[in-house]
Image (cartoon, rainbow, N blue to C red):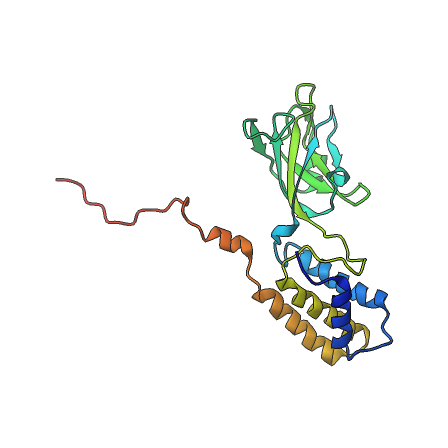
Length: 232
């Protein structure tokens, strides 16, 4: 988590914008939060602090499941796994559902009764996220779980003491993004362009933690490239 509260970020942003005294706290907060949301998108950076997991119990004959009950809003579903049980205990049978399909494909299919094997995400819930599965849960499937993983949207900064959920390294990038938005709104395109470039460079400089995790090859299968000679 960051150690820089919103009040300090706001002061730093105002200073970067030539200490403009006409800017209201609401304006400064808006630019900071826009930058915060921008950086939190998983296609910008897969922040480990924004990784989220939740479960949805299957209901008899129900093929649509609003994701509002997860307690957070996802940028998108990373994976959906069917668990044959009412808990996520590793002893329960599980199968990853095929995802990323077009909702129109599911709409054209007859939803047979049984266990799901694929899903699609479409709007309809209060936050615009509803998970659609390709099978109607039968009585023997009711209560089993869908384990859902994804990257959640962070809560916007509002109180002066609020801090981002990201590593301290991202404070500078958020401020650069807010500076870009500030100069753009103040119709200073030449300064906005410089800030935009600096913002992009800073984002690209910060190392992806998932790549560091992947650098441990201890369990990876590797092909033995040693020459083989058959015994005579």
